[in-house]
Image (cartoon, rainbow over all chains, first blue to last red; front, side, top):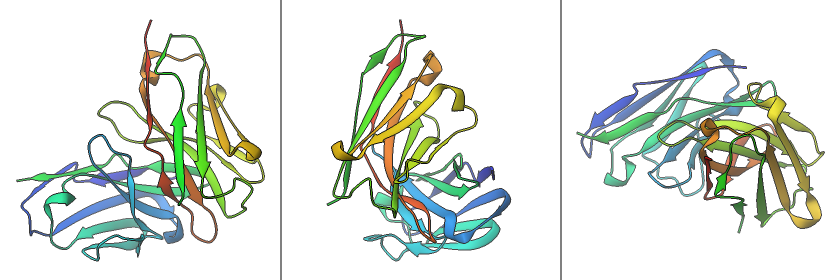
Length: 108
Length: 121
């Protein structure tokens, strides 16, 4: 199964700035099996992106996903105050799931 | 409305078994397009997938925990049960269940709010 790494570990930005988060897999991942989640303190993760680039229901269009193969990206075009959180990528392969270690987006 | 709710003990002693229940509503566990997964998150750490089960009763486990985990479901009760044997303080975590959407796309779309379990004597 593919192992996932995420970079950077922490991203310090100001509201209104663009955030680019990376998720890299140790082997090729099908785009149909790659998802992104947002987690705020004390809350369960929330699905943002599935199928690498499809926004989940109710997710603002400032969130976008892209990538293929081993390199995937989550972009937040303009950070809103509520976007400061931890973001995880998730892949499914060989009948198993793997989460990345997460990227924390905090306020600069 | 699709919801999942985890339940189980708050405190478990080392070497004992931990049994958690996920009660779902808004969908059926017999639906071939869904499954249910268990995920945990130790305090301050990342998410870790543990196991999942499909409508066919096919089960899959994390390789690192496979010998200690059992997942099962009772479709009539809309419940998925996870048992973790021989617990240790490192098993202290918030445990989540999540619905898996299955098809040409696979992803966990709806999550429970989680249940926090502490392993301590």
